[in-house]
Each structure stands twice: as structure tokens, then as C-alpha cells.
Image 1: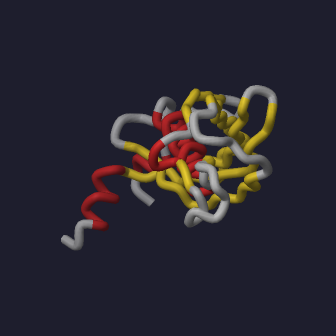
Image 2: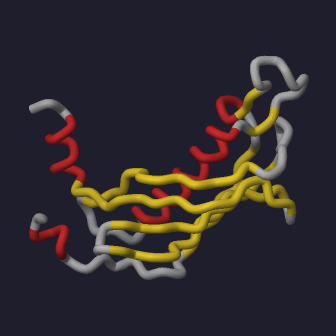
Length: 136
């Protein structure tokens, strides 16, 4: 572990972030034309959950650090048709080993839950990650 990785993170459980978005474009599916209407896809919903958690983490990490997704465990419990106004939220539930960030995540349309679950991200050193994944 590098010296920088051992520095305590300045992010504490309980921090949260929400963002509004519209079910549109690449976030949609018609399930291959089988359902007759475009709806928020499960991968689109998960992408918004990951994005929101990543931004929340980045707001609290030192320069040169970022996060990568590690685990997603969500249920897509209701549909949201094209054009629906939605809110994605993330709450940091736990910081483990000074590098594992565990979030509670949710997407709502007003008071109606569309998706709910957990998401884990790992803190990385951006420069070190870039050099290790570039093949050189």
C-alpha cells in the first residue's frame, strides 16, 4: 500500500447526495420492443446510482484520488416511463479499510421507489491506476 493510500479519508458515513434526472435517451429500453413503451432500463438506473455515488465520493477525496465501482446489489421494483422526472440518492453507510466506500442507493419518482439497494466503490490513486491499466 502506498503512503498516500494509508492517509485517513476525509469522508464520513452519513454524507449524502441527490441529483434529479429525466428518464430519456440511453437510459431507456423497450426490452427489444416487447413491452410497447420506453421505460428506464435497469442498467440505466444502475448507471445513475453509480454516477451519483462516484460524484459524492469525489467531492470528499483528496486530489489525485477517485473511486471505481466494485459491487452493485439493487432491486428495480417499479417502472418509470420515458420522460419521468426522477431523483437518485446515495448515502455513505460505511468506510472500510480506508478504501472501501459502501453506499445505500435509491431512485425515486416523487415518493414512489423505482430502485433501491447498495453500491460499493473502491478508492484508487488516479495516476497509479492509469499507468497500471495502460499496459505500460
